[in-house]
Length: 176
Image 1 (cartoon, rainbow, N blue to C red):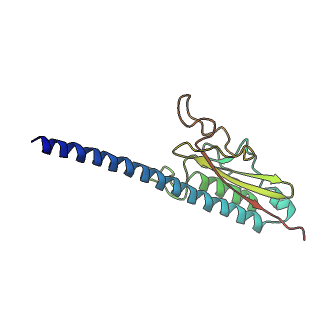
Image 2 (image 1 turned 180 degrees about the vertical axis):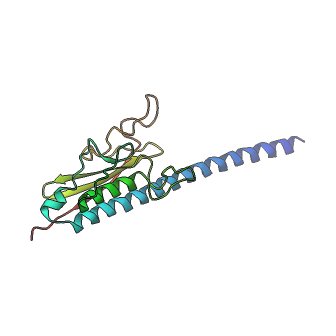
Image 3 (image 1 turned 30 degrees about the horizontal axis):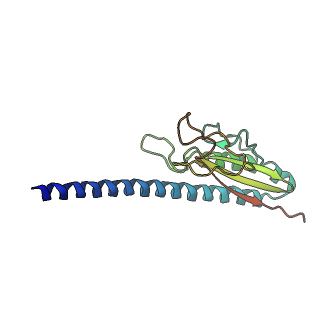
């Protein structure tokens, strides 16, 4: 009888370990999904800027890191110019408008996705930021998009931008 109880205890600990492993795998899968969505949206905006690469049009794409497009923001609705349409579509995509749940809520992008376009010399730095699930190292201070927007309450592990994730790319506009 004692052998059966010991066996049951060992099996219970093994099953608890497997459940913990499954949870970690699901979190890693979600982090990977969010990163791939962010890279797609980053590439989308970089391509839009490259298509409208004249100096006056490319400069119209600037989005200040202090007021990024995306989660929690009102997306631009003007469609008079290609730049206005591009920014509105990118904002909607950052909010997850590509996929909706049964109730109509947007679910197609990262958690709290935000996007910025900054001028760096004669180039454009495109950034997508989002909320990660677990704390890791904070992005560099030079990447301001979404800074301070993903901090949780005191005592949470998500403080000092440890849960903020960012991807960036530099769009170079040639002077012809």
